[in-house]
Image 1 (spheres, rainbow, N blue to C red):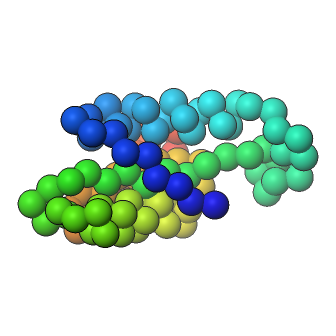
Image 2: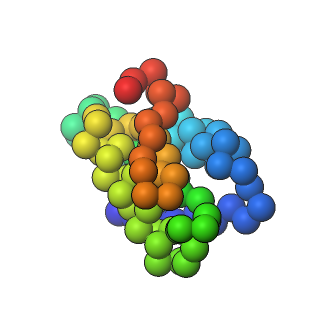
Length: 97
């Protein structure tokens, strides 16, 4: 599943901190049947994008976040990736990357 969280007036570094708190909370919560998941627990990957001169519409912000999300999934899941304009940067917030 995919969803979007909007954080108006939030610096990208703080958005990353919020994303990491959400990621950690999901990873440490015991969900029914969580052990049946590929990693033995429920985890999430998060793509973070911010409004800029290039990424300046709802569609382009969502597309940038989506690219970052799929990069996070391709790099091993349970992680956060940041998109800046048309480039994507890794976050080592979960000790990987």
